[in-house]
Length: 177
Image (cartoon, rainbow, N blue to C red):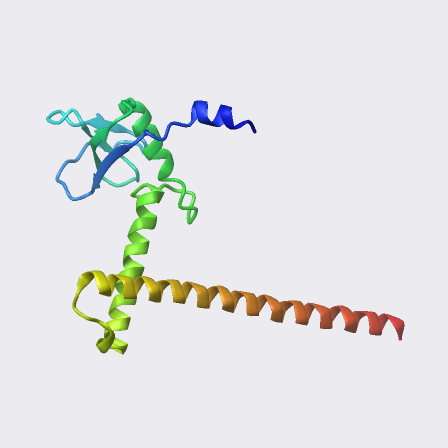
């Protein structure tokens, strides 16, 4: 692919800051008294930069506030992008309550909290009380944990390969007899 084409259509200055929350009292119902369908969007009458997006079949929509929209994207394109991101988690065929990027951030933050709690419990002397140093220590521990799991996966794959070779050899010897 030609680099000039990429540079022509790829704009590094596209930056949109959004705020998400489900902690609000807003409820929206259709004319039949039932919940709005998934994908429905209701603009906030008070704040022109806020809207509510129905991401699941419950009565608690996701409130989205556009904090910064440097490229001037339309509200409709932002709504569409956020709604499609609610289907990217790949756990179920139904939509998630939050866009996938936010779900991944929540999971990563929870993992960091779990690692920090485990490290404090098992080796309290390694924590200095300085938040920056403790964060560096937790990041190293998370990286080590991920490397350990990857190594375990590689070792498991090697074991499976050995088992498969043994099965193939046993089939060959049984056919020759």
